[in-house]
Image (cartoon, rainbow, N blue to C red; front, side):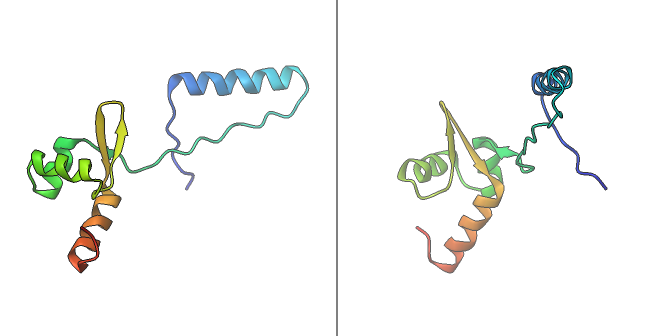
Length: 96
C-alpha cells in the first residue's frame, strides 16, 4: 500500500507549477518529496493531561531544560515519543 502524503494547498500548487515548468522546458519532472513527522505535537494543555502534572510543574521543567520540548515563538510544544522516552529515563533514575 502506498503511503499517504499530507501537504498544504500552497505546496501542492508549487509542485504542480514546478512539474509543468520542467515539462515545458523539456526536462524530466522530479517531484520534491516532503516528509512530515507523522506524530503530531502536543500543546501544553495536552502534555499536562498526558503526564498528569500541573501546568506550573511542566513550565518549571521546561524552564530548567529537564524535559524535551520545542519552542515556536511563545508556544511550547512536545513530541509524545520524546515525553515517553523522558518518562522511561526518569523511571530508571537517569533523568532529572
